[in-house]
Image (cartoon, rainbow, N blue to C red; front, side, top):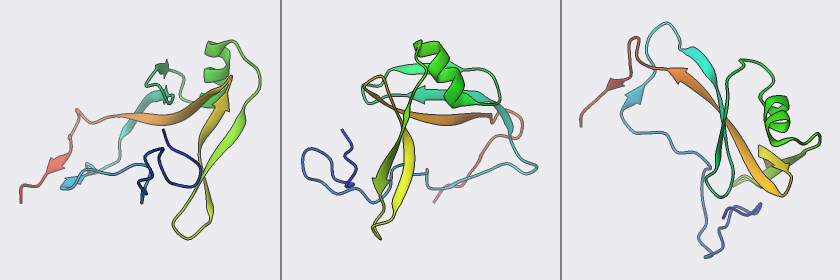
Length: 109
């Protein structure tokens, strides 16, 4: 469970919320956005297929109408918006892109 101070419940500090894979680079010409996915602290997922307003879609799918922004402190102490508190769940929303056309260039080390 991630706390707003950047420390998990075991006391371990985290430097970033999302780590990117080493050796991956985006394909030339950009990516095609397929939609969004929302994931909560329990690993439950909700697929959001419309290409605009993912927060509104998530609220509709959960049958709720209100949410609060959720923040996490960065290493320099500044707050970073990381998701939403909706109905007692901590939800983060991610874009889904199509990598099949061109794919990722994987560099072996």
